[in-house]
Image (tube, rainbow, N blue to C red; front, side, top):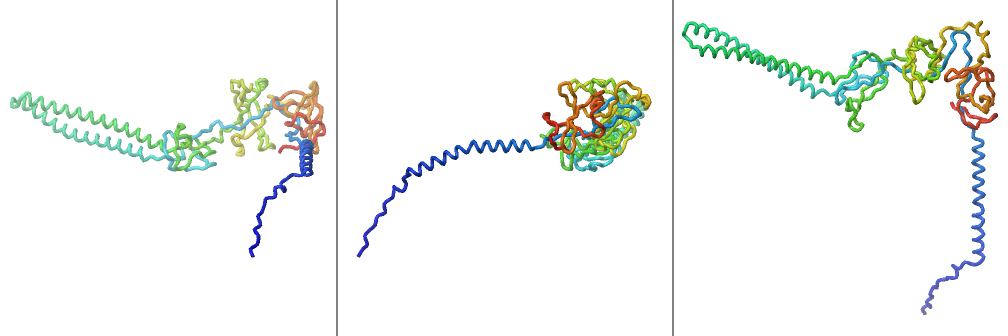
Length: 416
């Protein structure tokens, strides 16, 4: 017996949302929306707390001890070591590099071969000019042989004409032939001279394919490799080099500083200077003012001063940072200093360390990771430094760069 066929009907009632479920959904949404401001406020509080606990980063410098006896510093400035003789060596022609015979740090002598360019084309031009010269010289030899024979013929024609045996026409022809050969010889000599000139031009083109050092020094930059194109002018969209190497004459190293024009009257040629390299702060080098450049920079309100070292050391390298102190001409005896009127400086500090509040000057000392506000009495100005008459002692660590909102007792992080 066949079983009755059962038909499945969709239960649409199961999709119906009951009133209880609808009210629960509304309550969840209300809780979610109500929690958003709380979460935002908590984030702001957490960020403010983290920001508050973040230590400000500062740069510090030590207060310097004033000069004891000897010439006193009239002005301080900072600058860089710069060589008077620095050259970027380039080729006179455009060509492909076929050889490079140096590296960075290589000491080179004047005239030493640095690099070579492809000279195949110019050598062919040189060989062609030499061939033209040789051909013209060979023609001269041929014309001279013909001229000797023409002179013999001319002499015979003159004798026969005097004897009445030969006509005047034959004598004229012999004379013309001799003169023509003389002219051809002069023309060939001019062709030889022209060929010699072309040889000199071609030889110069060959010589231009070799790049040599113009003076003795040290290679500080290697700017081209074998296979690259070089040119004395910028071309090729950046694929053509304009230089082969940069050479510095270490014996020409000197100091270049910018002095504020308000203090340039304190600087005179041949004035004694104490220089301190940033890389070697414990070494003081004797130097003197070579020249004061007779022009000012209107943008920076400074005047450029060049200073030469009394003795060049091997550790003095181009572009090193250096601080200099311009000294007075004659040292002041220590007995006279006690008789000077007015208070004496107890320390010298960078100008950036001094801050002002109303009519009070103060500095921030750094001790145990915290800043301490200290009122100071400011004395004479020495350019980048200023004299302190009271308030700090030599060796104190002072904030020279930091946020403007520093407060007494703030914890800080020192930038290394």
